[in-house]
Image (cartoon, rainbow, N blue to C red; front, side, top):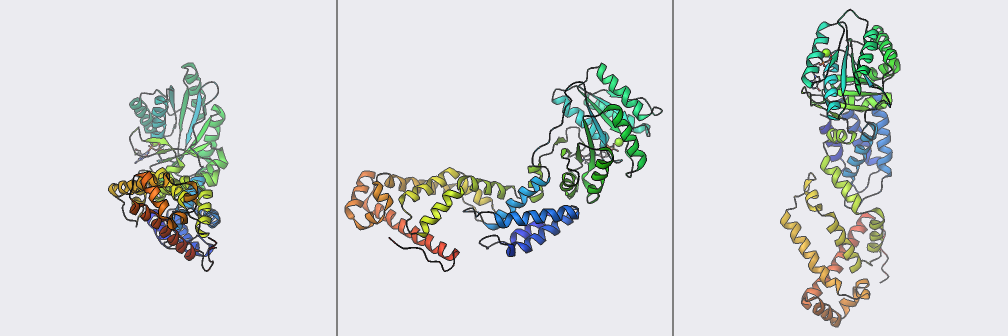
Length: 440
Ligand code: GDP
Ligand code: MG
């Protein structure tokens, strides 16, 4: 499974400080292997790995996010890009019926998709007509007719004597006279990509000038999906693909290759045999499914959002220069408050301890308590906590104004200095020998 292969990649980064060319080399090999095992084609994997490595090493450190989490994020974003980034909606004709031509090999799920799509469009408020342009197997026409009935959409067919391109013309005429919004075609599929099928498809395409030519691809196709998609695209020109049987034991590789080899997006995915089991293709959801790391991703995004790099850098400078004061303290507590469910998110990360709601409430209560004392300090006192450390008068005043005891104020001041010391130690360790400037 792709997920387990990737898991070992993340594990190799536990404990490193920043992503470097050297320390990502091995995890990248794991990712490469995992993708190949998931049936992603080699050239696609190669380009992917190159691009991820480049981006991973160049990313800025986000406070609170570990390098392995950061790599998960880079890999995720790159997967999303690889699959087209955004959702690709169906294109509708500006006037007259929208013609959708469905092509693909035999057994991939064309008939099923045709009926599913009709139901989907019906729910969107479009009126739809299906056309059976598969004249080789009477059973194929029956199958579409039955499924059409099931979803309540008419099916146009002419039996097995007619030529597909002729049925195509007649079907379109019929759809126009019935003022249908969408005319969806199901063409014959062969077991292999062959000349006869391609030339027939070309003829049908010429006859009806489709708005969309969608290639139906079975998700189980694996490695061959890349070749299949590019040959259909080269021969007839597709506008997109529909990936079926994603509910099955598919390794997901096909989803990653389609866009990369053809430049055309996956527009829908089929996830079951029921008529309702068709939905638009969301690259971000697919990436999360492949990575199985949704929790880590939302954590990283949240951390990114809250601790914007400027804030983090400024704070770092403060810490290094031993100037961390009550204003910074407040800023930090604000950040924590803004993060809201931060504690719960930490709990979701594998390997981290769960933080209980009671602990979160306790922490929030503590912060409020400290804030009430900081609020009555003078600007100079906030800026230079030393003033409070040196003067009992000042501590008494803060205690009186905030309704706390003198001892509680002393504790707060001591805590700030402890924090300063702890942070400096941590930063010192991260920066090697570089000693902070102690000018105060
Ligand atoms: P066609 O030969 O391309 O028209 O393929 P069909 O539409 O006849 O589908 C072949 C088989 O695949 C049928 O048994 C369908 O029920 C099944 N099938 C199609 N789409 C899906 C899907 O998304 N999930 C699952 N599990 N089965 C599917
Ligand atoms: Mg069929």
